[in-house]
Image (cartoon, rainbow, N blue to C red; front, side, top):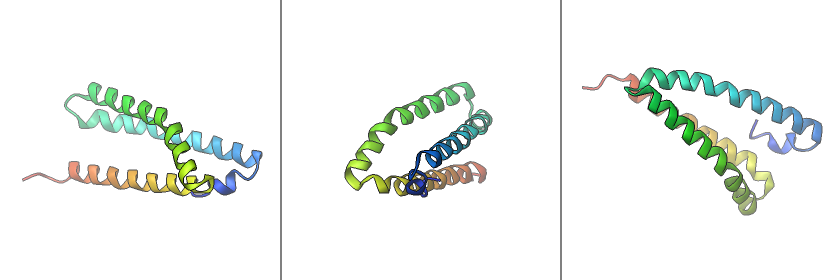
Length: 105
């Protein structure tokens, strides 16, 4: 969806559909992520609290970082930049998952 942002933003109806789809997808991540965090740590409530705090921090900074990206690279680049951020997040998540899954000697 991020890479297709220039196409979605071409008209108001497509932008509304994209925003709704992104909202559904975005909120669909929170519950499974919280469940995963609860199963991982020795202090699950602290881990979930910290995860929530970082999530809200990221949301708070998103407008500023998005505005800076638009100012630096132009509005057409925001989808590609967001897609690159998503790929980075997926790679880091997989690295974290594998490091927890592998037995330590």
